[in-house]
Image (tube, rainbow, N blue to C red; front, side, top):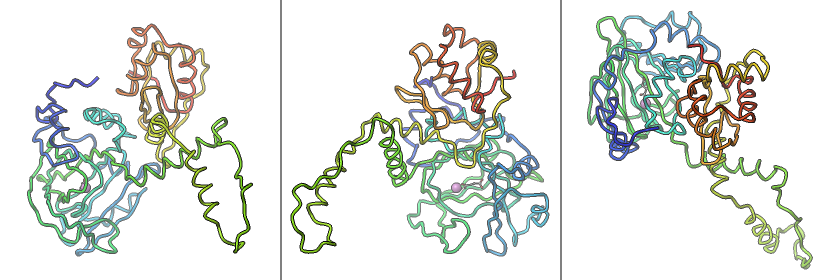
Length: 397
Ligand code: SIN
Ligand code: CO
């Protein structure tokens, strides 16, 4: 559980509450040496390797003679051949790889340092590589983001400009103009927090022959329109579930002759408006919608099912080894339900604390299971189903 009064080294000794009150979603903050020994989690070659894998989302952004180009992965070795290795002011480029936390344990562990922000807001860890001068240009994001510098350096410029007009027809979002308000040259381990819609521009600066790699921990701020339309979809599914259907048929025993048979009468509109008012929802519906929607894997995510074992064998191993969430799994909970990858369950009060630990820290150890007096059989069956689907795995350590 998060401790309210604990100064956090990653926030330069500030408590999470101080950060949330004064900076989160409000104004930028630079924390020098937020993670003292941090120099990155993977090499440029390993990042390029990830960008060549089918299930990994990646982009190469190039600025050639002032014109922006973007291409999407998966890439192959030939795609990197024409990119200049040494700085060329006429041809700058960067490689960006999304959701590195789905592929690298260390990346998932890095995200746990940001546990002072709810998991429901987390999007992913994106890693970029750029030779000197490279970057994605001046832009703004609709995300809260922590930009952690890995190897090399980056010159960050931010602007308090209100003109957020974008270059028309560019393959990525580039601001038409950029007036620098403040700039910092960040080094390995430095962390820059930026709230959504703040204009910024990161320019890679090589340190000798060490090129710049930046780790972006992005927190999604869903659009109100998206929440509304997704919620209506959820309500549609809910109404279609057995027992939830609205009873009755449209009734017009009071129908009178209309002058125009093709006209939809005022009376019909009022009757239907009254019917629609019967679609009601409670906070529990909203909670269930959020748990389902926010834990739902993105469409491109595929889980690898685990090798089949019997429920008995699973139960023994669970108690012996504990269990972990797969790197791609997202687990959240509300007062009454737990949500894993869009599926919900309730548990007994005794097992609830174990499930909260699994959701908060992505694993439960054998010791924690024993301390809890074991796990009830209905929960074991559900965990077994999730294990078979590849949502969970046994810790090998
Ligand atoms: C980057 O190029 O790593 C930074 C991306 C950003 O500015 O959001
Ligand atoms: Co950005």
